[in-house]
Length: 327
Image (cartoon, rainbow, N blue to C red; front, side):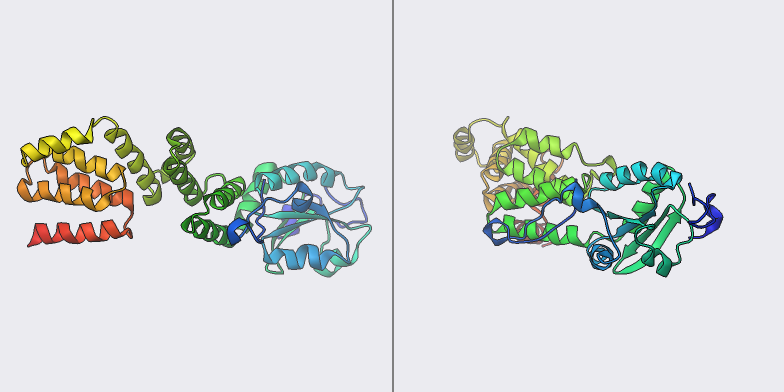
């Protein structure tokens, strides 16, 4: 930061110059909570006495911007609305603390602030970046994006807490945490894909699709997203397959009725009978690799993607498929 970029440089005396933070606590089911602060927690005034708590200590949680200003400073009044707007848009990635230098001159004196408005970013208790002057909104946004980089640790903790809650069957807490993450980071792919998956498992397919639509196009192929899309596609495909009892009858009469076996495999998958689905498709692969242009093997790979690489059925199924293909 230097005065060469500040058209109002010259010191104080001449009139100077031109929803969501993460908090953790006990949530329902013992999982970590994740909640949004009020606007008063995002943007606040501070004093010399409170500076250590409001800025130094708080910057260990997320970056804190300090706006050094004075009532007589016209450019300060020009900058403030834009600065506060972009901070709100950042949804807790940063906090803003405002210090009136007329009432509290010690801190700016210690930091060597010689012209205002001056905005200094603090991270981990230390000043790391800043700018001077009434810069445009776009430049403020770039500044916040720069200082907030690498500050996603608390979101990572929240994602882990949500996954833990979900794994324990506490879907309500998991959903609340994911929703709070998305308030702070509306395009967080991990939270969006997990929320869509939970909605799908709850039978709310239309809502799951709406959540998936919020995922940026350049992240649509992320494995977690692709897995949810695959589940939805399989469900919609299964809905067209007909009566499973009739398929089983056809298969009993003719074990070589690969279409009946294929459709039954998809129904087994929809019922959560993953091992049975795998065995049906492997039976087709073993009997006739050319059937439906190797359709059974291709569908099995789709199922593995939908189930996830660490799922027990996926691991067992891949082992069986490998043994069959390379025996």
